[in-house]
Amino acid sequence: MVELDEQLRYLVAQACENPPGSPQRQKLLTQIIRLSASRLWKESTSYYQDALQQTWLYFCRNICEASTGQAYDPTYGSVVTWLNAYLKRRLQDFYLYQQREQIIKVPLKVRHSTSGDNSNTIDPVENLAATPEAPPILENVRIWAEADTSGELCSTCIKGRPDVNCQVLILKRLPPEASWKELSEEFGLSIPTLSSFYQRQCLPRLRKFAEVEGYL
Image (cartoon, rainbow, N blue to C red; front, side, top):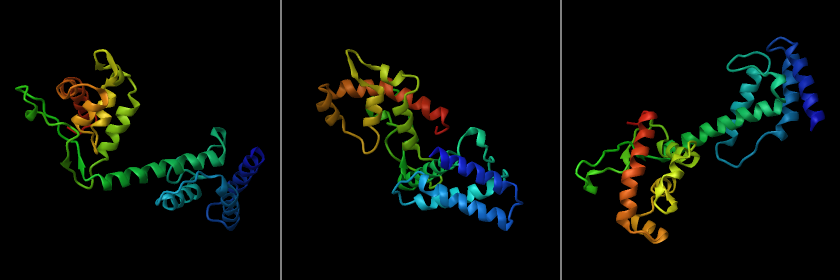
């Protein structure tokens, strides 16, 4: 593997000594593609080939000169590492686009209850129609809740029940959401207890996230 990396590094150096579009450079780039193809990240998604084609195009345009992105710098890693990083970014783009297409309803609106009546509170995971251009909000909410970078969601829990916290409930209530009855049976807590905690502790944090991300 190390030998192949060195061989690829040498071929890149040789290719870049030739002018763009020259037969010599094209021949060397083709050789690099052939040698590195088997080492690239693989997955069986429907959009993999499209992402791979974009990666090879990016490779040809930026391996020597920064035509459409940042030119390859051998001091930061091997050619394969550089290509895989780009390929994975494109796969993520395709994945998020696919999610956006599938999610036609998104949690955009949060309204605080003014009277304490549950009917006056709109759960941010209830669905509102979204335009095709809308970002994959559900996926972003899921990523934010799962990451919980500050630890705030996990640490905010029902008294004496660290297993019933904001992170768990927010994720459980994302579509296809678990009903309050199901959650009550799962955690052995009453529906009013769970619902009240969700409205007092989870909704404000969801609202804050939505405001920071520009969804509200």
